[in-house]
Length: 136
Image (tube, rainbow, N blue to C red; front, side, top):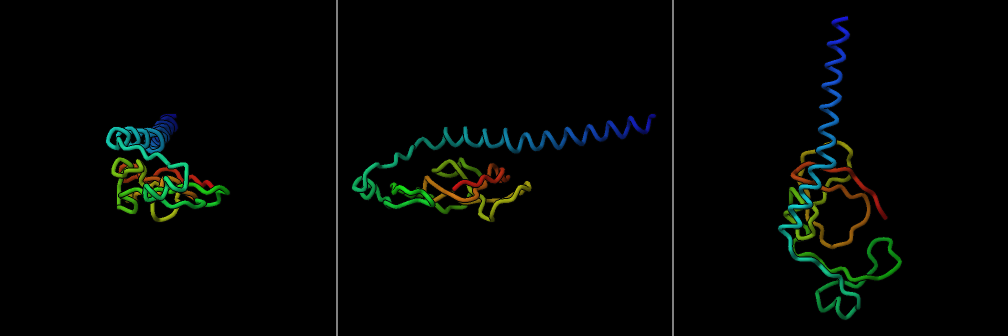
């Protein structure tokens, strides 16, 4: 009886430990990163609606990814820079550069070049990868 109780307690501790780590990784860390990034990065990129305004701001007028409509793609000044959290980038996102993985990885990423990105995206928050999200 005492052995079963010890096994149950160890299992419960392990289960709650894993749950707490996953909760912090997917909920707390991304929220803190995003909130700090919003406080630091005051500049908001407004996408021009016309081709002429787009070229005046140094943007590219094209179809991003599979979108059927052409839009203005204004590049961020720090696009491609190495980062460890979204708060380091003008876009407020740090993207994992080695392809999507559902494992927790301690890694760096890069600041996105444009405000619109497609495919499987995995963000980096304080050097820890988030869940991969695929969108087209």
